[in-house]
Length: 313
Image 1 (cartoon, rainbow, N blue to C red):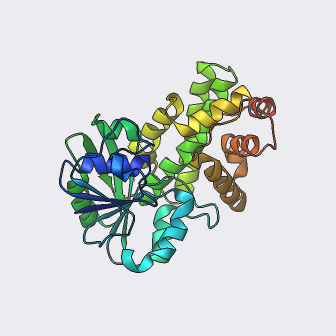
Image 2: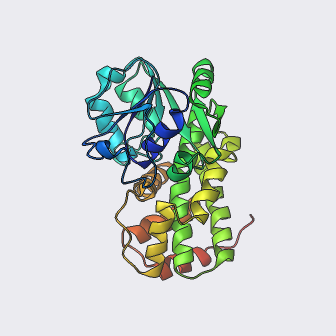
Image 3: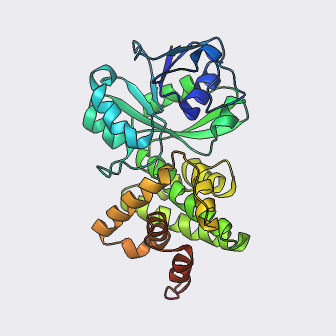
C-alpha cells in the first residue's frame, strides 16, 4: 500500500500514476471533491478505483510520499512526527523553508530523526504525470539500499526514476530553478526576447551550481534532471506557476493567485548568500528577490544586471 499525504495537483497525479502498481491511499484536508473522483486542481483526470481518498491520516505501513507545500512542511512534520518516525519518507516538495532556511530533508531530520528521507524531484508537471505521459525524475536518498528499494517501488511504465545519493544537490536543483523561472518569466513578460531568456537561464544555472556546491552538492547532480532538466522545463513552459508569476510581473499585470515556491526560495537563498558573504555571486536571485517584493522595478533590475562589471564566463 502506497500512502500519499497531500492531495494537491502533484500528490493527486502521483496517486494516479502509482495506482498502476497497486492500491494507493491519498490524504488531504477537506477532500470535498472525493465524491466526484476528480480533483479541481487537476481537471479532466479521474482517480482510478485503486486510489482511496481520506481526510484522516491513515495507518502507515510502507513508503510515505509527502506532497504538502514546502512552506507548510515543517508544521506538518511537527504535528505528525510520531506517525512518520522510523519509516521511509519521500519528499515531493521543492523549495527552502523561509523560517528556518532548511531544505525538506533537513526538516525531516529535525522532526523525525529516525526516518529515512528521500527526495523525488525533476522536470514534471502534474497534468503530464496524471495523463500517463513519459516522465523522468530523480530520486535522491543518502541510504543507497533504501534508495534502490524506493526506486523499484515507485517506478511505473510511464514514470522513470533515476537514483542518486546526492540529496543536497537534488533538493537545491529543484528549489533554485524556481527562482530562475520567475526571472525567465519576467524577461518574457517585459518583451526582452528569447535571446535574453537564454542568457538568463545560462547565468542563472551558473548561480545554481555555485550556491549548491557551496552547500556540499555535486556539480554533476545540478547537470541532471533535478537541476538543468527542471530548469529548462520551468523556464520555457506556460504551465509553470513560477514562470507564469514572472510573466505577469514583466507585463505589469497582477499575478494569478497560486502557490509560487520561488518567491520564498528567492528570499531564503539570498539570506543564506548574505550570511556566506557570497551575495555578489547571486545577481539573478537578488534581482528576483527585489522585484517580487517591490524593492525594484523590472527596468531597474535589468539595468542592474546589464551594468555589472565585465568578466570572464
